[in-house]
Image (tube, rainbow, N blue to C red; front, side):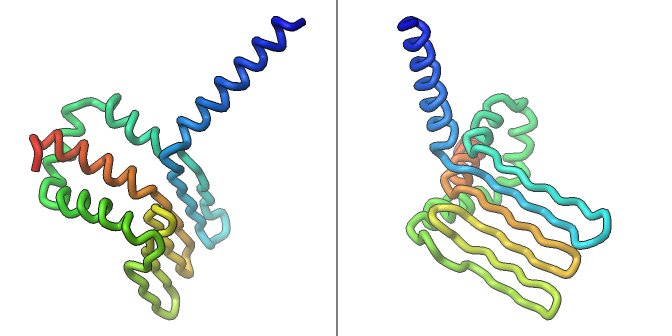
Length: 145
């Protein structure tokens, strides 16, 4: 009986440590709702670490092509994501029209994009650290920018 309790405790500790590692970089959250009959409603949360793992698993030639396409904006994105971490809660842009509202802000180390319109809503939250990691990896693939 004691052996089973020890095994259960070891399994529980492994699960807790694994979950903590998986979620330590934060979560990417995507919510999309169409405001029409039969409209799509997509809501998912993904641990941000999945992006980094995906970049190591993805075919290198595909990543190099993407890095080459984004070469001009990568340095600005990398520095921007790094510097935005100094402003934990800041509204970067907000635009309103009678039927649409767009807000881009940083909240607690995450970039948040909210788009509300008559045809639907989109809410996206991405940790700034993830953006920084992706741009750094893309710059490496370009041979350093």
